[in-house]
Length: 114
Length: 111
Image (cartoon, rainbow over all chains, first blue to last red; front, side, top):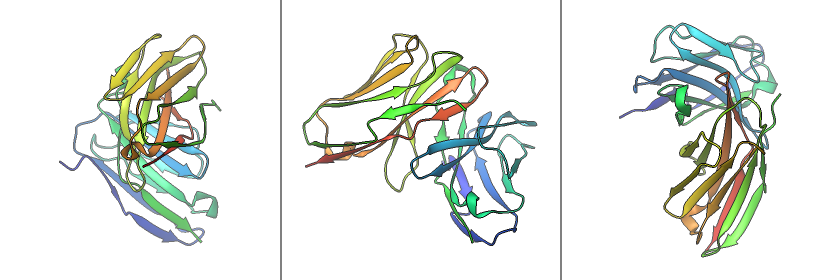
């Protein structure tokens, strides 16, 4: 039972490089989201999706793109990495947004931008 | 930007002590309030989902209450054990599908 799988677990990038953080879930969850976790700031919502083909911006969307072509996958793209994007990134999913379903989190991706 | 505040930021208690923390959130556009437990080197795990004013939830020695009119939720741990040591996060969910997490309360229970 894989749950929410994030890859890679660690990544180091140079300023200006682009990359995609992968997130996949095998629970047929409709709602998926991406967060970044910075010291003293808790989890901040970057982008989220309530179903395939539907995405929306969260609290801190600048510098990130997402797409949701399938129910299972919700990749997060960094277009041109900046040192300010050094963070730990978490992907989460829930059965639906409706009824306030709890989120299931992946193990996180630790990203460093030099 | 919506503020969800948790207090205290950290707490050190002895095994057997009871403790409680607070999550404050806006009283408008409320849809749900979640509590998560986050152990070091793991990912957050859901404790409670609360949707109605006056809700009270309990799981073992941990319980939570919700007041949506004044915008706060309390998490109580009765008789803390070292394995309760973790960061406890609350998340406010608004009517527009968005989650807003507090920065958490870090609990350390000493044997």
